[in-house]
Length: 451
Image 1 (cartoon, rainbow, N blue to C red):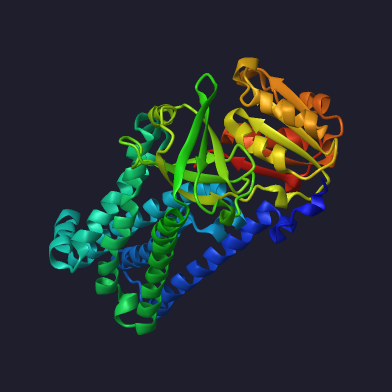
Image 2: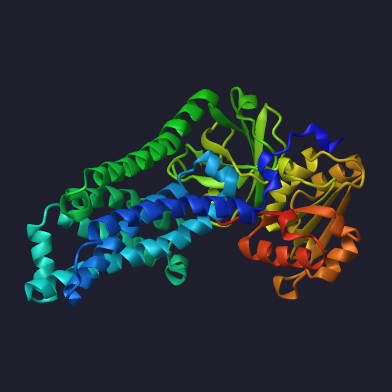
């Protein structure tokens, strides 16, 4: 096979850093426009007292925080073109960073305004808070919105995240949408930037309408149309090893999905305990237009119950997502690196990645031989493709992906593009090791399993 048989992604020429910088610049431009509204309204205002200064801080942080709140909900809005530019795993990281700024800015917004108004009215902070809630239009809803956002921020902290289930955390985060709705009315009713500047008001309403349209389109309408068109159902569930199993899904017109190896779907099984839970799982076999297969490692209640799903069970899915596909390659030689269940997309790419004998190498890291998943399939593909397959075994503490071991397994490693899949910690370590052995960062394409 020749690499020319697969189309090249036009974005492949741009590094991950460049693509993220372009999106960050677009977000930054929006922030400049938002701050310009505040500046236009505030440029001629004197700030004689501490109360004036606190009020100004409260207004500007409110605008900035609300703008970033809209960005926050769009980052994980499952927008295909945004996924293609940055990747869902990086969007998840951006989402976490942005969430911290949103909670911080809006908390400062509330505290500064209360303090500024209290100084101006010469009353206590508690009295001013009560007056705002009771006398100002739509302010009670705004305080509820802030409380919801603070709760989301607290439950996202590392220690709190460890103590609550994924699904409790997920449903708490859905309240971010409610917070946007609750906070909207008070902005137009009490914001000076909107009360005396009609263009500002139209711009602000447009931002919210565009955000709502994108969310409605990609989180509701597109998934509904997808599942009505393809009518997915479980074909078979096959055990691959202790706690690991593969699920084959069939449906109608699957060729129209244009799914590729390296991508993933969000899967939701219509069973008693699974209908309300959607999880991302990567394809573990190259899609052929007839069925889709993914491989799962049982790590929690949901994944464990999936092993008992019966053939014929209806499936709701969203996707395909992910941009780490064959189209990203820039070199003839490719190194596929898998950590743990990251072997699922690696196995699919190994099957479909164009290349002649010796062009493709798979490096599979696991704690021990018993943990190697899809081992027989990988070895069969290696024989049929005359490709190299190397296992790197050892505990995480032993750092089995140290540069010397990579060079020993792949002597010409610097001539390769590298595709890396696995947990965030594994991918970070692998990227560092691959750069050390001579692969530039721009030729390392990675997917971190942390959505």
